[in-house]
Image 1 (cartoon, rainbow, N blue to C red):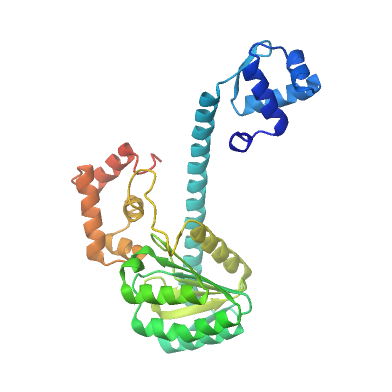
Image 2: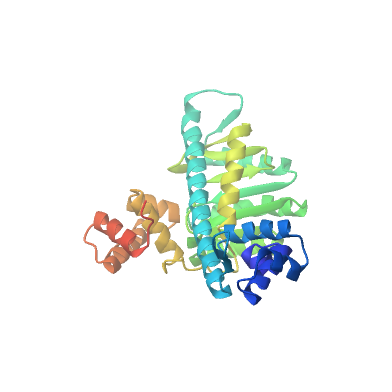
Length: 327
């Protein structure tokens, strides 16, 4: 019980003694558990902080274990919701910062940034970077299904990296689970020792190399238009934080994404969240790695379930139903 309630050994012993001897004085409790009165008073403060006791300094009683557990679970749920909100805020801030840097790069020259234009040159530079990698490559790979050409071109460098015991971690969009060629490639990566997860949506295409360099698209809307490679310490650190936040909340390849707490499928919950932020169907589709038609279908289904005739009304009813936070 102590692990669940967050109690140390003395506080748990005191809690049990108070349950067994209701109304007992501090002196009596100290004698029962064999410690000094000052230690009992310190433990009482911990029990009070956890809301496991009620009363004033003259008469304190222990709450029943059931009531105590209900209170603790409610607090844990609140803490989890707050942590998830903080994680999402951090992820959005990191995404905005990286996107702003990416959009600005073509406008100026800086020795910290290398510009690469053209698909062939991008592939050649990525192959060179892979050859220089010593420890780890971390990748966010949005966009859903990948072309057979891109998948085939990546196998040889990936095999070389894994053969040198370089750790590879990649997050794809959940939508690739429905694309056999991409799924076969992911299965091959996994079999070779790479770590692969999927997320409901991914905010940006990004490759991190040895926590020292990051590769980003020049244009968020078109990854093939060009890329930048930078060793700017601030951007690399932001990219690592973004990747780790997404990795922590992603689903391992062999696991199915779980339903959200509000009963929505992960993809539905993400669509609802993006719509509330003003994303168009096309922007939602890009983030989820699905076609605009699929994004429109999901949106229409959600609006029908909410009984809403407009997106504004859908947002209001989603908040009322608990699908979206109130603020």
